[in-house]
Amino acid sequence: MMVYQFLSGADWRNIWVVGDLHGCYSLLNSKLAAVGFDKEADLLISVGDLTDRGKENVDCLSLIGEPWFRAIRGNHEEMMLDALVNHRDAGLWRMNGGEWFFTLDDAEKIRVRTLLPQVAALPLIIEVDTLTDRYVICHADYPAEHYQRDKRIDEERVVWSRERIASSQRGQRKTISGADTFIFGHTPVAVPQRFANQYYIDTGAVFSGVLTLMPIQESGRQK
Image 1 (cartoon, rainbow, N blue to C red):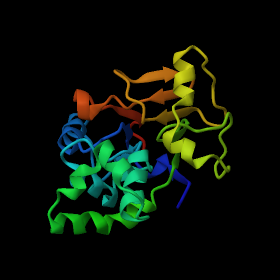
Image 2 (image 1 turned 90 degrees about the horizontal axis):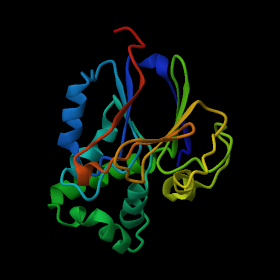
Image 3 (image 1 turned 60 degrees about the vertical axis):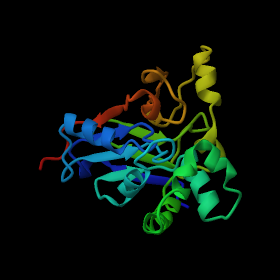
């Protein structure tokens, strides 16, 4: 499994980061149309949790094969891999929205299984150096006080931890050094939240119908 992935903003015109999709494929397409997303020139980065709880899970999972799309591994990808690849008890996944897979017809199950190697290869952390800033994107947290690419960190906390946002909500806000901005999903918030140099953009699309797209580079590369 890749832990860190580096992207150069110079390769794209506009770059957006999108909150947890959870099977909301049609909603995503509406949001992309609204911002004039150009699949030939722009990039969309997902904070993870592509599937579960929503209805368009196979379509959302298939995004990982698109050249204009990147994603990090969320806890729902972890649960999927545990159930379907590592052959552990699927009960946790099913309780947390994974039941959709078991109701698919055989052809759709095969389609999902063909994507599992790509899911397993998703990085835990994406670093993007745009024309002006360095962004670090993780699902739940970057569990250190200083960011450094390829630094060894607690991988489970990257995917699952809510300690930092809980502390921030209690007023104990700390900047993470080593990058300008950190972007997380995982913990649903009514509207995007900022604490120090950290943004939380999971606005609970599958429940609220509100999907957040956060621009991190606008009109960079010329077409």
